[in-house]
Image 1 (cartoon, one colour):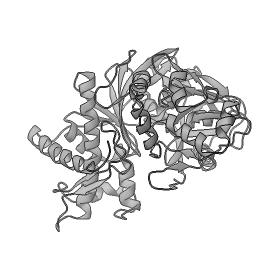
Image 2 (cartoon, rainbow, N blue to C red; image 1 turned 120 degrees about the vertical axis):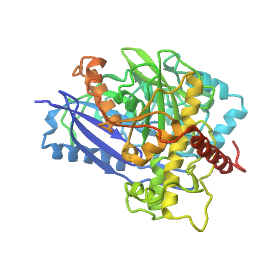
Image 3 (cartoon, rainbow, N blue to C red; image 1 turned 180 degrees about the vertical axis):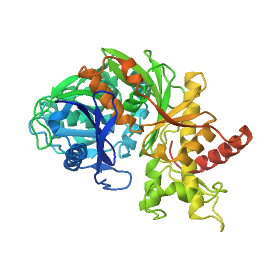
Image 4 (tube, rainbow, N blue to C red; image 1 turned 90 degrees about the horizontal axis):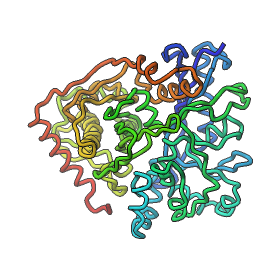
Length: 499
């Protein structure tokens, strides 16, 4: 008997499989498998697709084992994924022609600058809601087609497929039966017009990306295909829900009403606000994106992304050896009342929204003989919170109203000190749900809708339970002092760079 929904959360550093009850969406079991990151040269980040696939299959096996369930218990599969990470593969064999180029990768910065110099920035911003930045998929596709001998000709003959991770996973799970994406993932490619709801030649031609290699774009909740038999799964399970990780988290946080917002703290930090069914262009360095598409109706969101959040903690662990595990940072940072004069700008992969400076570099300032590992740990958490504060200020300006509160999720949201610092930086309440796996939860909700397990959004909303709310513990004078100190350091991180 089918009793659970499988949510596959394919992230930047690992793949997570979550089994959720069909009855009440409670977590039955969870398993994660990490995989290596590959850095061919400075500013380049790649993934090996065989390693990702092994991590996905392993996570599914581990979750089923923990739940003591057979794969026949899976009623439907939902997928959520790192979004802009780009894959080109052989349509006949399913084999990638190059490693995946990860969303953090900056190798196409010069290509983006060239497109801007050709006067194309307004075309892309108006149609896609995005900015011309290496973050997004379009220039990554172009780079792969240039780098692999014969790839352009093969793409023009229809022999190659382009997709983000969601497309590739559906292709793999279905045994090559479906080459699809959903509107939320399509909206992150630079090739998709969010008003027209389609990939267009006006966006593909400047990058010389053949439209025949693009996936079909579908709703975020529907049956796209059924599984082919594999080592992990039997044939016939409906693959029924799909959304990019941040949109899935917005859905998992049940931010179904216009104006509701969430921030996910993972490798990076991602702030999204539901803006309803009309496209609203950002004038303050954010992007406009598709939140989800249900029954052909699109819901849009404003989004701000900082590239480094949890990755800064990983750097303290792996690069500097200050901590042995990521959760240790909270205890270390709590050894001091504040960071003193130490400020850490975690621009380790350039700056994302609202600054969009791929050449910015990480910076630690204010060190003295009194500075300790605890001060640096606390400054790291401060830096993560202040980057989100910058995103929130831009979103307030675009939306034209204040935040009434912020819902938070992701692994780093379990850090109570970080959440308190976030409430202090924003001056609004920060609410954390009981289940911080809201990315996987959103994928499961969508799959449940697509497969007819959940009746409607109201049924989903009943399951959202708040665990803890953090409120600001500082006054406006102290908030201004911290903000001024942060902005001075932020400016230094961009000195001598090209913006």
